[in-house]
Length: 257
Image (cartoon, rainbow, N blue to C red; front, side, top):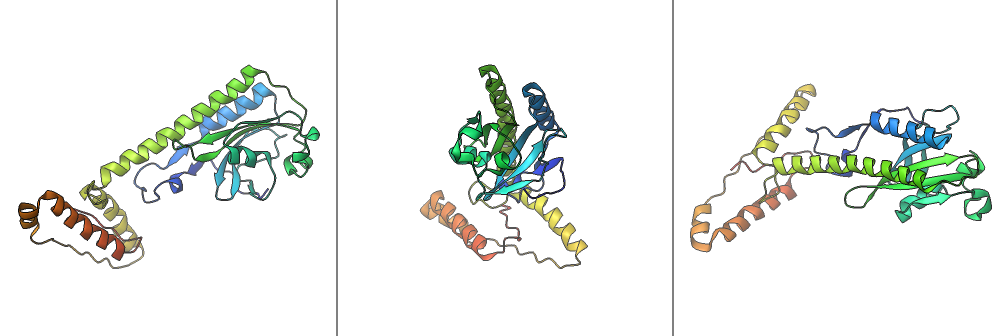
């Protein structure tokens, strides 16, 4: 696994809308760290991790604080490496390997062959839409036979982490609703003002000019009166779509009316 610097927070915004920079888009992982350490203590396991799926790889997000744990935050493994975690992610199902030595499936798994982890218990961590965020994993160097109550405890921690992810998703969705125009999908006045502040600040730092264009649609009242408000809405939406298609990703478009 590649080594990276340890982090205390992770930006989760890339999984939804990266433009939502005006809201808190990070989770404080102190609670997750305590969960992992407690899990390692209860299971007497040398290594417990919370991992996140990212593209075609998996990366350690949280690692239990033990000298026996070879994994650290930022370690990663690509999808072509046969590790326990990849099977959990692909199947979106729990995986319990009591003794990898008796299963040829793991004969080329470096977690087993190099790190010596004979036993593995892993749970998928899912976003509210059932897409995979990552995994919660317990590793041991000896064969295990975990009782049902221990497995239920891991399931409980999985549920708690997924509740955090659900809250993050809800917060982002509510924020998105508050700054978007319902008819056109453009920013509303509030969204425009929020983005404009950061836009102006960036232009000042980089000594760049800003161009501002304002459009006013003519004859909208006449269209509504003669053809109905649905036709008027279509007129507005068609212009909005043409505007979206004409600007760059870093530009701001809004409906202020």
